[in-house]
Image (cartoon, rainbow, N blue to C red):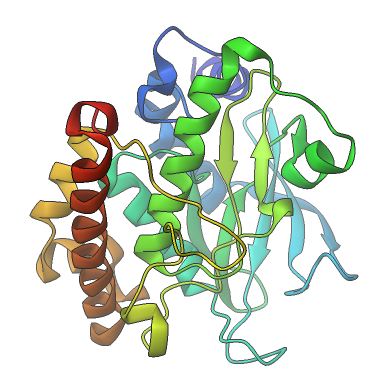
Length: 275
């Protein structure tokens, strides 16, 4: 029965259910069984390994094949820390991003756990996607007209999330797109900045360098959730994966987000912004 459940989850992630894009990109049944994937990532036997290198694998993570009770899946293990290429990079931020994603109910970040493999590191379920945003742009693949509404809302959620966690590395290869035009977000090891502009202004606003990229529509429930955040709530979610200063910086950006959403609501009308 357990095997069947895991396989149903593996297939169900790729199927679009009615109303699923109101907030989350994973489906309700997938979210309900997410703990099983966390256990699988933590305990399944490693039966294959391949280190990823090259220009598009900046942190040189390992692609590990897992098997347990007849289920075989791949995960991405990362142990980057310090400033390997001049930027602050830390595998712990992968765990913190995933846990905040769960806390807020965004459900856009694949299951991620801590696992020891040549030392401690983050281990994220490998998502089989249709394409990356880079491929979409390079091949000029058009979004079907009936998907544009939900696609735009997913983009606004991504901007919201990256504003909150100060992710300054959201390049086109870490947007994963499914055939039904849902979006998964990966690669958060360059997040949770605590200095300079990262605690003074948001990345995604009408003043973004290169042109406006705003959080034009946000679920009311999401806004209510970040209003309720405090230090202990964030600490309870992320554990020791963030320092006190990193948690305080999240809350500082939360306040900036609330001000920005108030500005957008006054400009466009609350009914056109919050849903």
